[in-house]
Image (cartoon, rainbow, N blue to C red):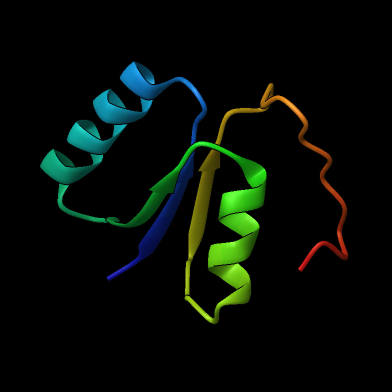
Length: 68
């Protein structure tokens, strides 16, 4: 089963996406957070994800290939 990481700063949107993902069954929502920093901390802790669904306009977001 695929593990999904959700990164969305708008809480109502994040909650709605969590419900949509849960009702779909696959992929499984592994973690949902509101900032890139939270997502990176989760990934650096050794957690596994197969797919990242992210808001492209997150505040203070800088995406670098070597961020992990």
